[in-house]
Length: 65
Image 1 (cartoon, rainbow, N blue to C red):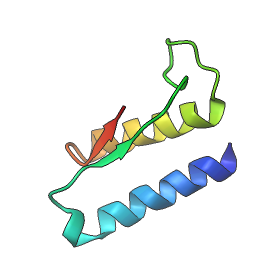
Image 2 (cartoon, rainbow, N blue to C red):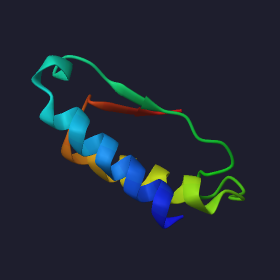
Image 3 (cartoon, rainbow, N blue to C red):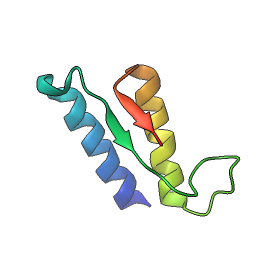
Image 4 (cartoon, rainbow, N blue to C red):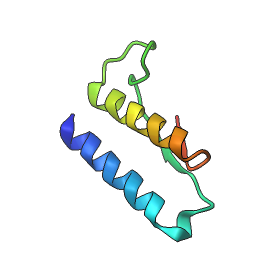
């Protein structure tokens, strides 16, 4: 789980640092990772939460599917 969330955090940081992606959205696709929806992928759930936090701090830059 730590490895996956560290990778996702690095990707989020790189995405936000790149000016060329300023008008674009980064899409994260998870499966069985949404709290309240029967979580069976704990690493995916951690990434989901991390991206939700990044999304709230940077509206319009990320999408969770």
